[in-house]
Length: 344
Image (cartoon, rainbow, N blue to C red; front, side):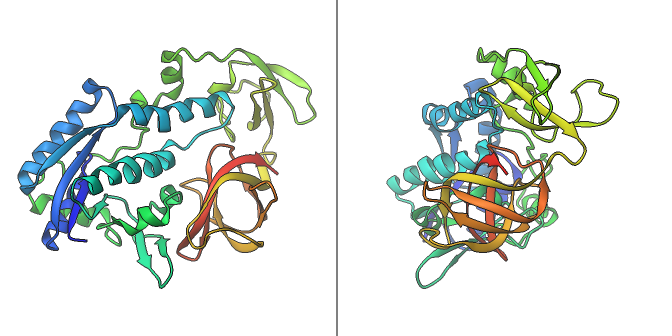
């Protein structure tokens, strides 16, 4: 690949990625996707333009708000209504950053794209593999849905680099966002207040019952969208610590239990994507990560006739959460992953 479109977000990681590619001799074009309403996106676009001007590269502003709503926002809302806790970054990476942005790059004379993700791509004789980055900021968990075409047209210039070094590179290049804080929020949810966001869309969540594992009614809850698996605070007074163990949209109930009840021995996952091979034919042993900040755990993953997989952990895991992603690792290699739909 000679000409690369870099996804510039206005942040330090993507800026450093563009700078590194220029140092390596690539022909670089910047692309920023307009995904949010204009007043919410203008600051990031202005930052990206200043970065592009400083680096001496062209910046294209590409409006993809309609497909972003359809591919990321609408499923996010639907998952919450269905009593699942979604992972919109996974869908955005697959459908938007490595989907429509890659399509735009290829249609406009580029050979591929680069982003500021911390991950690694390796080519074998038969496949492109996604691997965990050597950096402490490894983000391979969010990239497990990428397919072979996407991986074969992507570069991760920050692989193996640490954040302090990245900020230093940005400073050396005179990039003014070197000290800009990393975003820790869902980009389209103001102030990371997803309840207020859902309410602004007219999503209502009626009161219902807190129940125990036997179905006994304990008291009333304020609406299922206000709770997540493993939650302890905001449940009320029960004379002892209680945790959310499951949520039912069908029955409008939130099941809670004492400490220890929030552990599960396994899960069922759907919407599977495998990177290391085309399809899982037989049970495998691997490590499974059930949320971004969780440590991966040894488990057996078994394919089911309905296209799902069953994951059984060697030891029970805390707060297995429907809607989140279960990502499978063989050492540093991402085997694949799927969406958690059931606790076991």
